[in-house]
Image (cartoon, rainbow, N blue to C red; front, side, top):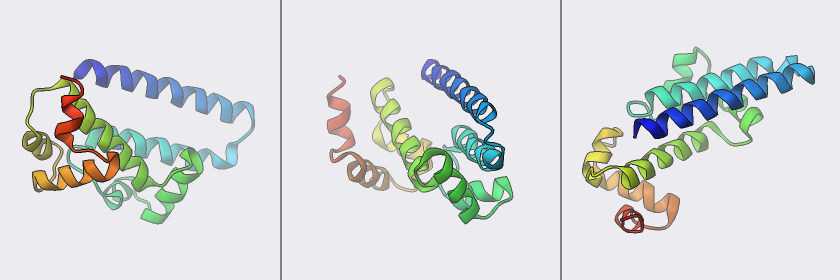
Length: 139
């Protein structure tokens, strides 16, 4: 699991550097603040995703409004902050299902779902299949 996290972090770092270079070369200084906010949000999601799953919590950590955070993320990544957070959470759930032996309930509690049924509903709504069916494809 930590290997996947390390690779993901390295890719994120490289993409962030490339994006900053691109912005500098193309004189996109006006968007630099939004770019910085968007990447700070993404970094915070990586660090705190297991504990915080609301955009408002991340906005508070960045000392900006939820609306400002959403606008910055939308400008940078062309998706809302909520969607980015849900994508990352879904990716983490999939990683646990594929690469760990944790039960669905253990994964749910590890990712701060109040009940395993909430994780199962979230997963099914996002993928169209149950977490158990998804896991069985990789066994």
